[in-house]
Image (cartoon, rainbow, N blue to C red; front, side, top):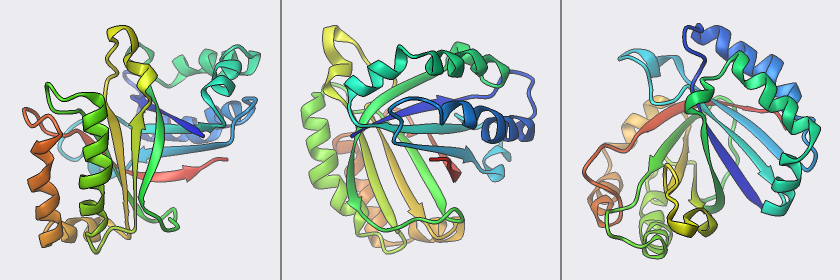
Length: 223
């Protein structure tokens, strides 16, 4: 199964609450009509993410398909065109982008809608191959993050190799998703020795020249 992660910014001038309402109640039913859709989750940036200004994204949309072939077939459908036609009503379409990923679960457990969902956008270390980056992130860094006591679920979303063909470069090399019982638990996790081990390892595979962008979201499982 493959998962597309779309980076969402609301339409310029649109109120944040109006945007969230439109995305949940008007756009979601259009997306659910897509042929081949297996799962659809909206991750909305929580209100506290706006206290210091605009977050990097207002949320991410996650959709699952059986394969890239199924995804391509969907993109040729009338239902997909209906999705695209609705996007200008609430999205900043000029800056709309996405990555196609495969999940690597590092810590598996159920989640609930009340949990705090940390979504981090990861770029690999300059000069590091995609293969070496994915290997380190999955086999070395992942187990370190899974040891943090407050982490309930931890999933790495690795960009598929086809995204790099012909010298192409996706916006990010992956997305890390971590669920906590609450934002308080998330903050508490940063005081643990396991968290310090995670941070110490990051320069070994992540671009350390800039902060890792992130949002904290509330999730709505549509399908």
